[in-house]
Amino acid sequence: ILNRPNILVADEITSGLDPSSLIKIEHALMHYLPNTIILSVEHHAEDNNYDQFYDLEVHFSQGQEPIVRPIISKPSGIK
Image (cartoon, rainbow, N blue to C red):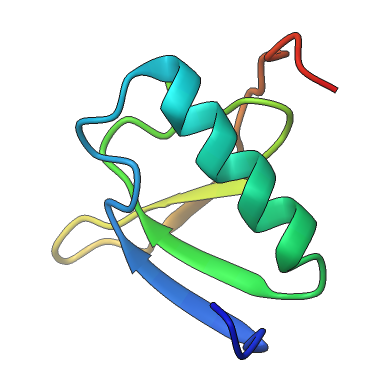
């Protein structure tokens, strides 16, 4: 993260965090990595999507084409 990569791959980076901590992490990543593509494995992305941290979700099923769709965001109330 300190090197500000072009692409960051994260596996459940916010797993187990309370909503307040999760929002702080998401805001920090958006602030410090504004031009980074973040590929995140997240099992609860829709529940944890504050202030449009996630843009799209992709569902993979064996033997089927991936399904890509926009993901709904909710406001955190933090500016």
